[in-house]
Length: 222
Image (cartoon, rainbow, N blue to C red; front, side):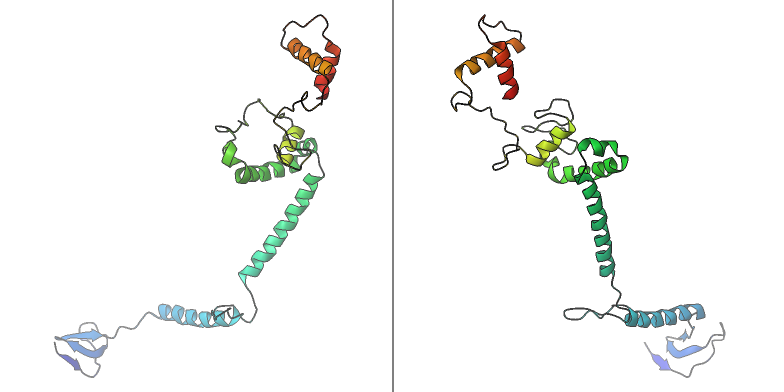
């Protein structure tokens, strides 16, 4: 393939100048780029240079260039996070000082509690009780009305705050019945009385000497 470097001339067919290059009789037209395209290109170059100067743009070994105005999106994120923490702190303070009944009665607090509670349940409770609270083998179903420790708001709050069988927490739930007789918690006559009361609750006959009044008191106290 021969390549000739002739002087540029105008192509007879198109009227466009050529570059002077010719391959196998085919001459390369010197078609200029559109002015609008060149304008956008040059503007982009100028904009890029200005951006490099004004904003952080060039990575260094341990940092980046700061730019003239020192702007960084990371600082905006820090400000937004601080504002969010302050907002949540105010909301948490409002709920911390309120009882469950007060939270339920306040539409704003109740909405906040529901949103935050859903997130907390997903993070801490769903692994055992399921995402929808339906429970699993060995873990109670939270969707029915069968509650081991009570289904009222204060009772549920007590269970969540203090847990079950937590050592060192006097307010924790205890799921094992103490040995009232072995440990000397109840006297023999109190045990007999409360046993008679339990039979009374289930509709079974009690002995003629059963002290049901004492049994009811012991049952209520223990």
